[in-house]
Length: 239
Picture 1 (tube, helix red, strand yellow):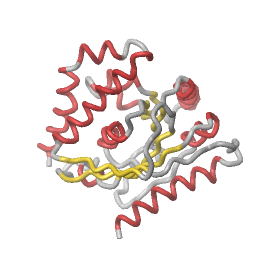
Picture 2 (picture 1 turned 60 degrees about the vertical axis):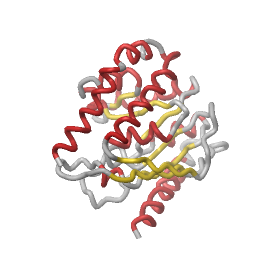
Picture 3 (picture 1 turned 120 degrees about the vertical axis):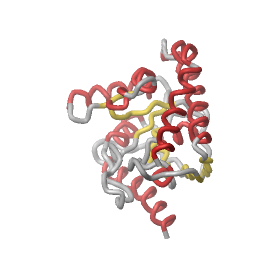
Picture 4 (picture 1 turned 30 degrees about the horizontal axis):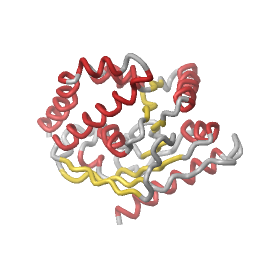
């Protein structure tokens, strides 16, 4: 549905144009990030509802206001960004691929508010870890899609998880909040002629404390246990 995709990009750009002066002011300092985050959540709602979708967010546990989390979710669509912003009232920053900074308008704010990683550059990965640590120390949550990207094979339910999110969570002793996104691949996949309006369901699971976990002993076990929570939930939904 080419027109559906064109409409998506119009919805991405239009609120940014309208709110541009306020958005610029809100990214001048990390101290004003909370104001930017509120506008980002409004932007996300405009896009999701404007596409004829309606978010259905269920929670096994409410997030604690003021608590820093490591949010991790399966990654299937560009709309994952918008859904995660709707899910969390607690301000967070994304750790995401640097290529998104090239998108007109969106990229301008994306690179000024989030942490960009060039996965082909080992120095970039080290710098990302340092920046993420600094934001966690400042009390801001982090959101990472631990698959590292969207699988090319649409039949893959959940790809291999990378270590970064779990290493950061253990090092900073913050809880990990697993999130399962059910319908984003159906509503707006990366395949050009697919997608359409409908429900966009999400489930936030019970957060998992990292108190007492140590590196590197607990990292792999912890990573795989979180992956299993999301994978099992997706598989049960497919039955």
